Length: 252
Image 1 (cartoon, rainbow, N blue to C red):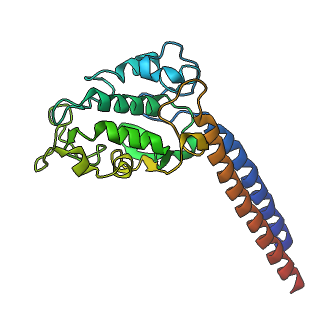
Image 2: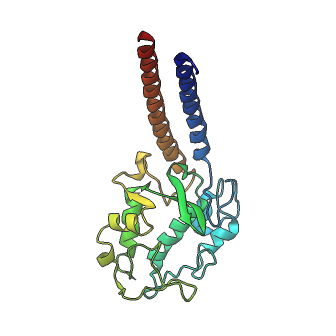
Image 3: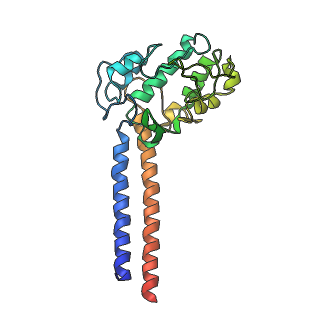
């Protein structure tokens, strides 16, 4: 039988290794692409990104072809029909194009990537904190449009190859489906986003819209550091517990 003191030492070593590995994993999550349908394996420069996807050209998880397809009404990306309740207004559609660019191109979504039990992707994002302005401007530009569903991720009729409103649903005003910006941002993609009251200048929320250097880099860094601190705190607590347990065993 292995001595109790030896077991305690091994547990301490394992706890330290866990703390060190969490730091390495945090750095990996700062610049990564999710394992999904059209994403690159690793982010990198893409000088020819199209129109609204262009801000990610210096470091992107999308290709030029994906960025072009993101702007098409009949896109090969997901065969998604924006006009399922009539023609979507151009001012509303531009936000969905931007949302697609953000999802496909962003290399800084690591803190919010989770496994996805879906046939067409292995990973997805959950609870990405969007800046208040992004949610409000999106909702405000779409408030006069029409839709039949609150969650656009699932529940469509795909029998034609493109999404159609399911039987029993009714096309209604946007504000009936989504009474507030919070409702829209959190429900439309199955909690991919979470509504915040933080502004773009806070450095604590993700921006769909930006020009110049990507401001979301620092936001991801902030959340990863917080996560690392929590892991370190847990590790220190574990070490203290193991040390006290070992001391207690020796005393008896």
